[in-house]
Image 1 (cartoon, one colour):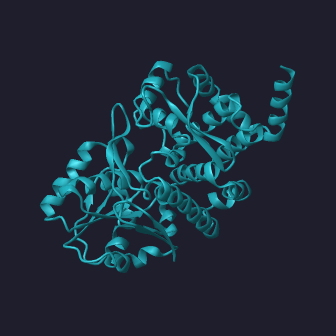
Image 2: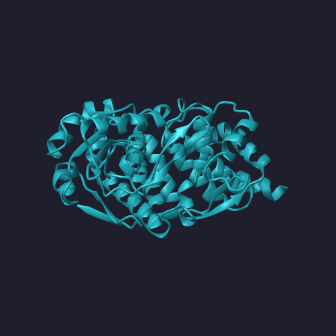
Image 3: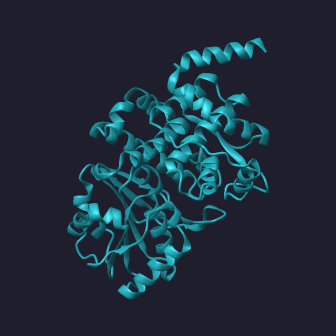
Length: 383
């Protein structure tokens, strides 16, 4: 079993990753030490698939799980209150253990509830989606949305353990699986040229959920996330690179009331837009920008970007937790595998990039990218 350690000011923890890891959940959780009770938090749809296996492999857990809606639109403070009240009714005290079983929404909400309940109880993550396995379950970010924006209320609260079992992705709908692949593309673009190249050469195997391909991309992504978090847990510097595509992606989610895009889909559009911004601002080489667009497009179809007034997008992005002193700052790859952060982009250029998204995607999916790059280079030289 691959074990990746993540350092935290609140205590280091392990991410245990292997096919069949769920079968070892009981012994792994027991290794954390004594607890006065284990309480499983999940969603109805996840529980239908995995409830029996979880209860079998987490002995000692309370018989009745605490279930809540895992739709992004339901990721609100009311869900945290629901969980807290259920924990009180179940008799959970400060020495209880909360086990979050589900995707990113379950992990974010359950993590925030664990951070808040009795001022903090132990939490273990068993992520069941690709987004959660490679990204949201690692790093200690928890939170819920407000109507004004995504993840505006939350806490840094690291888990005591993360158990990643790629076999649990077998029940994931294909659209949700693809949503997670976009996050893996992000890791390659910002920090790992070898991972990016692997995705370019083996995307078919990844989308078929080939076991070896999944093991490689999941382990590699977790290692990148751990390396970044180890250096900057509270997002004061380097950790900001993990937000590549997220500034615009979060705004698209909020502007469409969290109902049009899955998280990874919105991030995909954000990455494409930033690649175009970086190209226009001469911050990324032409071919690297087009490789990002081409690889993102190769994952599959995306919901179209609706017409959103420029003023609304700007208002949402200025309200984002990553904005600084009334300025929207961007994460822009300088080449495949290397990234800059804290970049200010003129607002007209941002809107031009957003407006060009349908055309860029259409070209990426219909025309060889090398030809596009050559044409763009010639146009630039002619000017």
